[in-house]
Amino acid sequence: MNFFEVIENIITNYWSWILKGIGMTLLVSIVGTIVGLIIGLVIGVIRTISVDKSNKLAYVFKKFINFLIGVYVEIFRGTPMMVQAMVIFWGYAYLSGGNTLDVTLSALFIVSINTGAYMAEIVRGGIISIDKGQFEGAEAIGMNHFQTMLYVVIPQVMRNILPSVCNEFIINIKDTSVLNVIGFAELFYVTNTIVLKNYQTFITYLFTAVIYFVLTFGISRILLLIEKKLAGKKNYVVLGSGNMDAESIALENNREN
View (cartoon, rainbow, N blue to C red):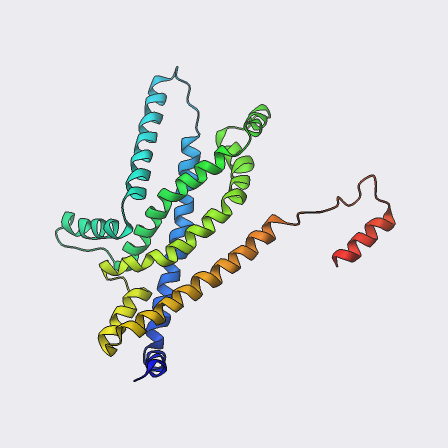
C-alpha cells in the first residue's frame, strides 16, 4: 500500500480507537491541569501564611509543612513523569500485595500531582508579583489571611498566571503519552496497538504526530483568544467621566456596537 492508502486504512478501520485515545488524552490533560492548579493554589496560600516566632509550636509546625511542600515540589519537578508513573503504579501494587490501582484513576492521579508541583511554583511567582500594599490594605480593613487571598490576591494571581496555566495544559496533552508504560489507553498507546495490527510503523506514528499537533495548535489558539478576551481592551474610555458629555457617550457606544 502507498502512503495515502495506509492513512485511509487507519482512518477506516481504527477511527473509533483513535477517537477514544484522543478523548482519554484530553480527559487526563484537562482534569490533571485543573486539579494541579487547585493543588498549586492551596500550596500558595499555605506558603504565604505568616506565623509569629513567639508562638514556637505554630512556627515549628509551619516550618515543617513548608519543608514537606518543598520536598514534594522538588521531587516531582526533578524526576520524569514516566518514572513517577512506574513508581506510583507498581509501588502501590508492591505495598498492597499485588493489587493494582485502576489505570484511569492512576493516570489522573499521576498527572494531577505532577502538574501540582509545577503549578505551586507558578502560583508562588504570581503571589510574589502582587504589590505588598494590597496585603497591608486588606489587613487594615480587618481581613484575615485567607480572606485576603480569596478576595484580593487570588483573582489577580489567576489573571497573571493564566498564560502559564494554559502552557501547562498544552504540555500535559503531550506528556500523557508517557502513561502508556502503565497501560493507560491514551492516543500514543492506541497508536502502538494499531502498529501491531498494520505493521506500518512510520506512517502510523506520523499520522499520530499530526493529530498531536492539531490538538495542541488548535487548543493553544483557543486559549489565546480566551486570554485576550479576559485581558479586555488595551485602550478604553471611562464612560460618564467629567470630560465627556451625553452626546460623546452616545457616539462611543455606537462605535462599540
